[in-house]
Length: 509
Ligand SMILES: Nc1ncnc2c1ncn2[C@@H]1O[C@H](COP(=O)(O)OP(=O)(O)OP(=O)(O)O)[C@@H](O)[C@H]1O
Image 1: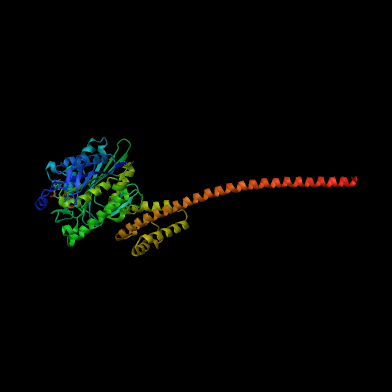
Image 2: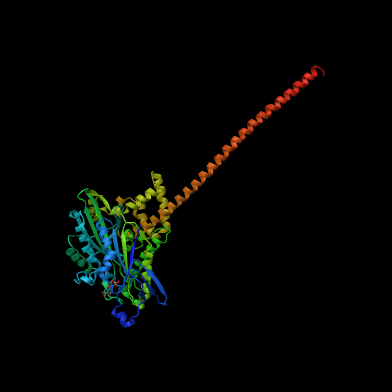
């Protein structure tokens, strides 16, 4: 079991912060892993993380500690994720890209260009590097829609789930990249298409969550096994207090969407760490759905919490630090993704081929079938009705009506092959439905467990009762034999008495 690596980075005070609030900072450095934070009430709060990067930290140090081990693992076939999180203007994009993705200043290069270099260096030193492909796709989540940054006409990409490959973005444009220079060119193109706007905290503020996905495949020349690693970098949009930033109109709408998806991320992390093993609300937002594998599944993940050191931003920085502390409690065990070469080719087809969209529902429908052990037609109908009842409890009326129109009245029972028929606009409803369905399955599973427990109790009570009855029957048999013996003895006694009387009478004693 490996933890998510959580690091904190404080950027230098900005000119504006210095001008308006002076040099006052809210942190006192203890060492490379810990510091003391002074909150708004001037109370000292100690914090400890995997690594703390202070104001004068170098971009190269952040890359080497946080990203390089993940890059190396991705080339070996593990999935990896690197996320930058923090208040707007806290330094997420600077950490991710540097001053600009094509900026030539070696010291200021961010994680992305270094990751690209790292991927190709690791491939070069790998023994299987001759049969290797690297692909890049880029999407942004803007106002709860996933947009392809390489093809802006694809502005509502669907998030799908496949049993073997996990979460996939169906139909996104994938660029094959042969060297770092080519990768930078594509990154520049995608980044230029991002939604950026001016806020009071940042003149060039990212108004969307940006997701960079590198997929690396290597086919072994020896045994033809394919190793595939997926490396996801996420530059989150910054959280902001709208009352503080004075956002209005479109900027306010954007801020509301950003804050909503970040709060869904917080809810997922709380659910993953509260130790109750309950339902994880991944489907509450596009962001959490895309990060599902990274947070709760098959990925080695690092989180960089970016903060302003200024006392004027203490409350925002404190909330970022608390988010980081909570995330540190998640455990994710990464697995190597290896399969046969032919299987690997199928995967490549699946990612690019829209015809396979239906596969996304495979897990849910199979799980439901397995969970309910549906075998015959009648039990299938019974199970469907029970699930529908549960769904009705968890969905609003409109969703249930649409759901019925979509596939229940048609007699379709979550059959993946029928999924293509659905209007893509209904995807949100389907997502909520599947979420509710998962909840229903969990509840039904609890019910089944409860019934099994009751069944076990009844069985043991029955066994005790049976044992008692057997003992009673044995005792009754004993008493019955005893009664027989006593009766025979009494009969013999009577006979003796009768014969004695007869003898006495006959001889006139
Ligand atoms: N470590 C750093 N060293 C020097 N300058 C930095 C550092 N971090 C951030 N900056 C500067 O601070 C400003 C805001 O940073 P950046 O745009 O990265 O913030 P952000 O967290 O991405 O904000 P938003 O969420 O609004 O996009 C930029 O001008 C950036 O160059």
